Length: 226
Image (cartoon, rainbow, N blue to C red):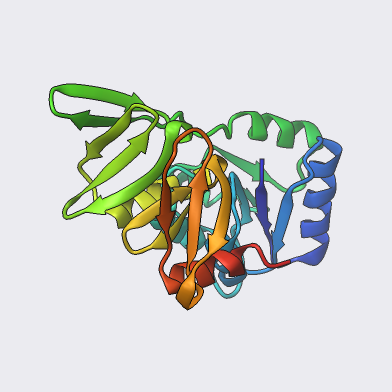
């Protein structure tokens, strides 16, 4: 699980990171502002957001509203020294609300509630219907007002635009490599350079490849720069 923690107080941020480490979590991203958190969410895979509420540039509540637009299924835990924001926090769909100073046991209980809901896509091909998990999808291709979903069984259709699918699946390791393609990184066997700085991606399990745009290749490379 990749956890993004946000707090404008360095001591509170380091304490939370230490508690998470004690609970066995190693993949921790840290941000000292809401703006920095949004930048990290655009470039890094995140499975859980833990954010303070009272921050000067962008409050935790405002941050959560923006996150809900980009990643509606991302679990959010709020941490704060004040109880007055609890109702609004749960209205946003927070899985828990921690009052500072909280214990490792209280944090552990909150984390146990932060499992993302199981996502399933009901797709169709003629008279056949498929109930697909994200991990069963190799890639998604835009097709006018809907998308074509490539799974092991072949192609099927889902009534949504690719921009919506990008938001829906960004916590499941899907990346946009072209205005028309979303790629599931878990199924990529290798990729090759093409002319004009583009990339061709090949898959484990199916004998197919898809090509990125020049801009998509640039964003893909930037995502994995150390």
